[in-house]
Amino acid sequence: MPAETEAPGVIAPPPLIYVGALGAGFALEAALPSASLPAAVRWPLGGALVLAGSALAGSFVRAFRRAGTPIPPYHPATALVTTGPYRLTRNPGYVGMTLTYAGIAVLASAVWPLVTLPPALLAIDQGVIAREERHLESRFGDEYRRYTARVRRWL
Image (cartoon, rainbow, N blue to C red):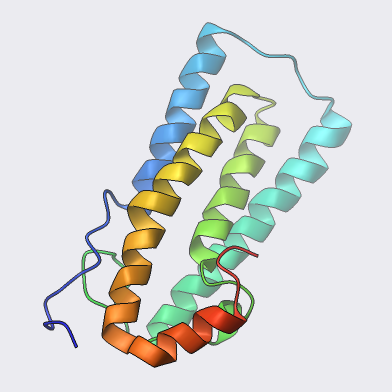
């Protein structure tokens, strides 16, 4: 087992990656406005995405707190969380933040933030999730490998 002080070594706090990409998307939207979505689509779809994303992200926080493991990715995991939303996806926090991000873009009727979302997801996948997965495998070994065999990374 790695030293107790070893952490995943992610490239940046995940919320910062999402907020940075969203900000870049809105800057592009201000410079090059996109077509507007009809309110009949924008409000129900955007609202549903924000609500679902917020609920999923909140459930990840509650699951970590119940397990007594740190939420910030700069601390080593102290428990392998496989209950709650982790029964459905290995990354409910990132799925939740992605849905919330998309919902904000839809509510704002802004296409450019949706264009900056894929680079954010690539950064999350390679710079955060891949590093967290290596960390969890080194800390929890076979238990983590069994978990990854039965639960998908995203959905």
